[in-house]
Image: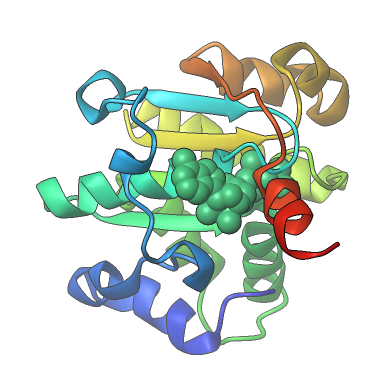
Length: 195
Ligand SMILES: Nc1ncnc2c1ncn2[C@@H]1O[C@H](COP(=O)(O)OP(=O)(O)OP(=O)(O)O)[C@@H](O)[C@H]1O
Ligand SMILES: [Mg+2]
């Protein structure tokens, strides 16, 4: 689940290396915005997005396809992380596990990664430490006008209960909300092939 040490070194060192794989999960390596005809990149670019809906409705698929458009059409540094990966990364660096400074990691996420997907916010409860770490990232990204794309199973009103008012307010009040409805696409696949 956690990011590899080589990847941590990459994201802390060289922007060009960062552009090589962007931490996009293998399952989504071939996704494209053209898979979702109702979505146009021009309507979504340079905006923070909060993509929400129930399991399997295509939130991660959409978020990855948007970040891939940025990669294709710009020189901006981009990255995909799940909320769990992000927390583990900060925790490991905080515990001095990888010999890199916390300040360098904050600089990366708070100032340098121009387009960041944070997948699955609300999927696990954050500790106070996790909450304050995420607050720092969200606040600084907001101040520095960096783009953040969120995915969540939680409708916006439920996010307040889950991550608290301060964090939910920063995530939601600055973003375009996209609700994905419909059926669980994984289930459709299962129904078709597993009788
Ligand atoms: N528009 C699409 N075209 C083709 N495949 C899609 C599309 N949207 C989603 N899928 C596929 O359906 C599966 C479920 O989508 P995805 O993982 O994005 O759901 P999710 O909403 O992120 O679910 P969860 O809440 O469980 O994380 C994935 O294999 C994904 O690639
Ligand atoms: Mg997902």
